[in-house]
Length: 69
Image 1 (cartoon, one colour):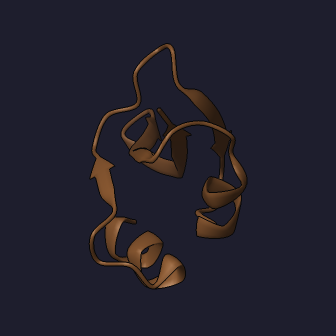
Image 2 (cartoon, rainbow, N blue to C red):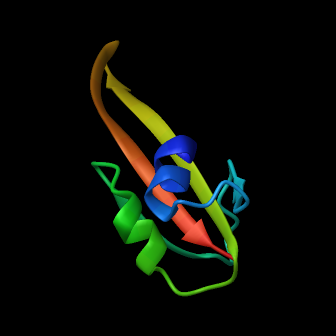
């Protein structure tokens, strides 16, 4: 996710954190799309998280959260 966001923006100098704070402007999706993260309002710092969801020991999906502060 970090690399795809940097590649999408074409800027290796952007700051990306691997945790999304509660006060960030954010969105959650089932599929990762860096263009949606870029459209979020907020500050210059991007934040991303991903979780694998399991049920009864079987993988169900990956959920993504992106934000800006």
